[in-house]
Length: 249
Image 1: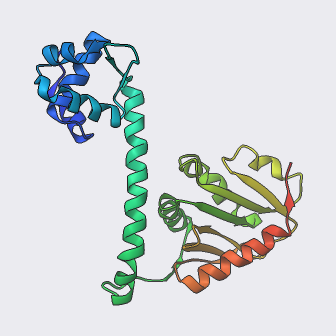
Image 2 (image 1 turned 90 degrees about the vertical axis):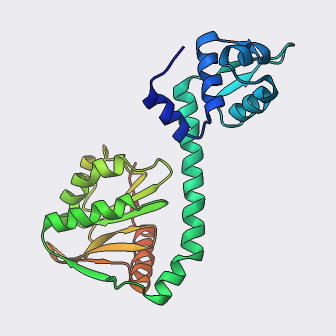
Image 3 (image 1 turned 60 degrees about the vertical axis):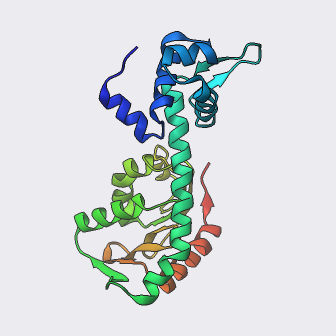
C-alpha cells in the first residue's frame, strides 16, 4: 500500500518518522499482524521494530492484543489525529503558561514596544473587529453585561461564541424583563441572568481585557482597555451585579 507524498509529509509533521509511517501504513493495509510480519512487510529492520511499535503506541496510532504471539493493529486515522490534536493543545497551553509567566513580565517591565492600554472605539465595525480579537484570545472565561442598546452586538457575536473552545465559561447578564429573555435562549452561552436595569455594560475576557459600553439608552462611548486596574474593577463590579441578578430558567 502506498500513500501520496503530501500525506507522508503530513504524518511526518504530526511527529512520525519514516519507519513509523511505513509501519502504520502496513497495519492499515494488513490488519492485525505480529512484529515479525510487520518488520518483513514494512521493511523495517527487526532490530528496530519493537522500538517503532512502542513509539506508535505511545503516540496513539496503534494498539496491541493480549494473546501470544502479540499482534498489533491500527487505530482509525481520524481517532489518532484527534488524539494528536489534544496532545498539541495541552502542549500549547503548557507553552503559553510558561512563556506568559516567565517572559511576559520581562516584556512589560522593559516596555520593549509602545502599546496602548486604552482605546476609544468609534462605530459598530470598530467594536466588532476588536471584539473578534478579544474572543479569539479567550482561554478560560468570558463575562458579558448587556444593556438594552448592546443586545444587537451580542446577537451578532453569537457565531464567535459558538466557535470557542468548549471549556470556556460564558456568563451573560442582560437588561430587561422576563418576556425579553427568549431571544437569548438559542445563544451558545453557559448561563444567562436578568437585571431590570443596567447603566452601561461590557465584555471581559479572562480578567485581562475589557470592552466597556458607557451610557443608558444608547452608548455614549465604547472603550477597550487592558489596564489591570480598570479590568479588575470592571470584573469585580460585574460579579456584584451578577450576584444580585435573576437566574433564568
